[in-house]
Image 1: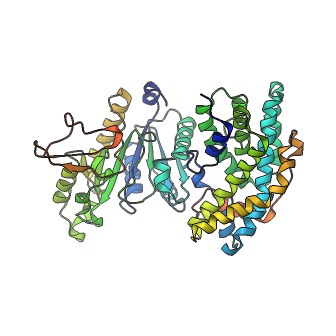
Image 2 (image 1 turned 120 degrees about the horizontal axis):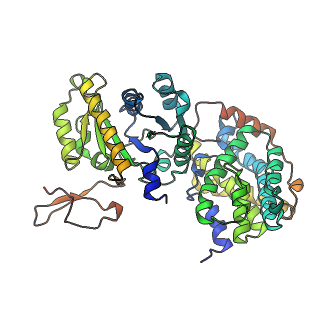
Image 3 (image 1 turned 90 degrees about the horizontal axis):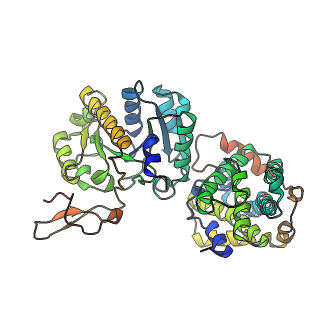
Length: 252
Length: 225
C-alpha cells in the first residue's frame, strides 16, 4: 500500500455513487463548474453500458475533454469500484500523471443500486446521491451509501413540488439514518446549495492534504440496531469494528 | 515463504484475481455484436483456442525463456518477444485489450514479485502473455502448465462473458470451456517447446479480428474487448 505521505501528496480521489438517474453526472458537472477556476480537476466515469456519461460530461464543456476518462466495467459496476478496482486505479494514476499536478479526481460509479459503494482503497471520500423524484422514503430505507458515505446529497429539490416530496422531512430522515452525518439538499437552481457543495469539497480536500481525513468504507451491509442498557444504538461491523460501544457511535 | 508454481498457476487462472479481467470477454462480445449466433459459441471458442490463445501461449513461453536463458542481459530478450507477439496480433483492438490486461496483471505482479527478473524490462503496458511469462520464470512454472494456463484463462474469460451476454445453464458454459481447452491439447507440446520468439506460431483469425475492430469503435458495449 502507498504510505500515508504519498497518499496526501496526490490528488483527492472523490467518489460519486448512487442509483441510476439521481444526477451523478450532473453533480460532477456542477462541481467542475464551481471549482474549475481554482482547482485542477480530472473525471473518471464508470458506465454500465456505453460511455454515455463520459460523453455527456465532455459535451457539457465543464472540463477539457482529455481530462474525462471512461472505464468499462464488464457488466460489473460493483466490482469495478469495490473488489477489483484495478481499472479505476490505473485510470486515476494515468490522469494524475498526464495532468500533474491534479487537486481532485472525481470518480463516478456506474449507476447501480442502493448498495454500491466505493472501496476506500480507490477513493479517499465519497458522495452518495439520491433525488427527490426517487421518492421521499428512500433516505429512510438506509443502506451503506445513505448511512455512511462522507456526504449524502438529496438532489433535484426543485422538483419536490411536482413529485409530492417534503424536502425537510426527507433531509431529516436522511440525517437520522446517518447518525447526524452530513446531508445536503441540492438543486442546480439553488445557488446557496451549490455554494455549500463547493465548500464541502474544498473542506474535504484540505482534510485530505492535512492527513486528518481517513478514508472510510461505508460497508457492504446496512447497520443494525442493538438494544442495550444505553437504550440501544446503531452501528456496523465493517472496517473490523467489533462491538466497540464506546467512542463515536451516536446513541439514541 | 515461496508459493508453489502450481498455486500461482491456479491463482492466475482464477477469475477472482484482482487484475481487471472482469471487464474483458476474450473476443466474445465483439463476436456476438458482430452477428455471430450464440449457438456458434463452441466453434468460436475452438477457433479462439487454436489461434489467438495459442499465439499468446507461445508468447508467454518465449517470454519465460527469454528471462531464464539470460537474454535479458543483452537487453533485447523481452522486447523481441513483444515485437513477435505484436506482429502476430494484427488487430490494434486486440493488442490494446491485451495490454490493458497486461497492465493490470503487472500492477499486481510488481507488488507480489517486486524483484522478479525481467519485471522492470516489461515497460508500462506489456501484453498480458509477457507478464505471464515473467511470473512463470519467477515461480518456476513448467512450460506446459504455462501454455494451459494461457489458453484456459482466455477461454474461461470468454465463457464468463457469454453467460452474461447470452444466459444459459452455467454448466453448459463449463462444458464449453473444457471442450475448447481439450480441442487444442494435441497442439500444446510444440508450443511449450518454444525458445525463440521466431517460433511463436503465426495463427490469424481474420473474422474475429474484424469483429474486435468493430467492437472497439462502438459506444454500446459491456466489455473492454
